[in-house]
Length: 530
Image (tube, rainbow, N blue to C red; front, side, top):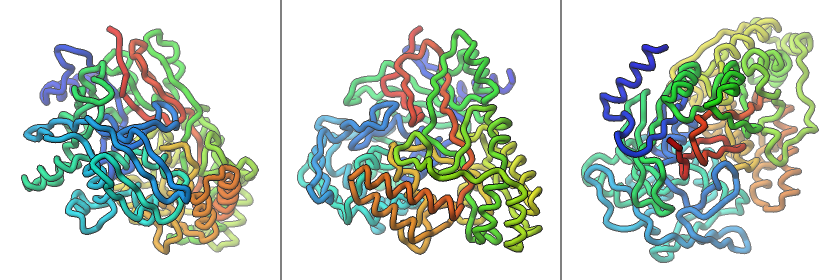
């Protein structure tokens, strides 16, 4: 362990990423590497965490909550029919300077149009840059929802929607809606390096991106021109440490100030450490397994229901989470309004599961259980979880084997529907049920969007979700979402496993770090005492 810690620190020094000689440095120990630094392109938590310090959005969440506050828009109005959202933009907001790029103008409406039209318009010069896979944007049906984005003047923009969208403001506070610099994009296009917009990002946020050593460390510096004021911490480092035991060692040694996802086995000893504080909250998350309905025998509902009855979730919670989670029965966590507690969980009943497998003629059917390549906040030991599931499924007559890939390949193959069963999870972004239930739907389309890993389409489910999006009546939305959860439970395209208690560990000299049910790292305003 000591050698690995020393090696990581040596690599940081070689790259000039060691803590600054002067000023405060805050080190965050994350669990995995980002896919890149384009907030529009990817949906893994590590990628969104890595861009959050750099960017702002039109509207934003109060840290640690899902309450909205003004961001780059200082105010907004919504038309009576719910189809037009008009935003008045802040003035005097500066984009960051990077390398040979120095902005010559302040943020304005042109940057908003550039950021959204890049995703909306297939003929936009930046649409295909970096692959053009806008996972959140497409998965949330934004190409169909947003009819146009118009510049009314330099400091006013209007979004016109094709239909009412109740969670639209909350959606715009998510990382995918970050505002990029059109001037920086033009600069890169002229230089012949447009892809750098997603590798060397420029935003208006509290920290400027400095450098990234793949799989090791990301460095940021405080943005001196940040519109909410310069940050009290001068240098922010993301130290990428997949092994939770090493993250813990670095935290206790003072080599990192904040760490995510401590191993369940380490919680009590961290709690007893006088130099460490734990922030715990009921998690706005779910760990689940996607059952690919396009792969026999999972195309048979009886087999999917049998799998739900065969897996001993209580045993998984004891062995994998060490009690730090609760069994899941819905894809929606209990902390989200409209959770349907009337749904009766599938019982752990191997005998009944075996009968269903026989009824479906699936005895001996070969299936693969794909387990996540690294631990996640919602799944601290993916391989162990896979092993327990494998034993449970083999016991009911299936022939289950385990498989995994590196993180990028895993995601690519799951999106391409090459899996049978694939572990996954979801951490809520905005506190709205739509954020969980819609991204698992087909949005009324014949082809499931990329985030629908089960590849399950249901006209009845989709219609309920659509109606819920188009009304602002909370009681009506609640009833619709509850019925959608009932249908999903019956059709069983997923194996919901657990809702995890969110835990962040930090040194006690870290000040103003706030987490809540969203449980995402946000370092704006965070300080540390000496």
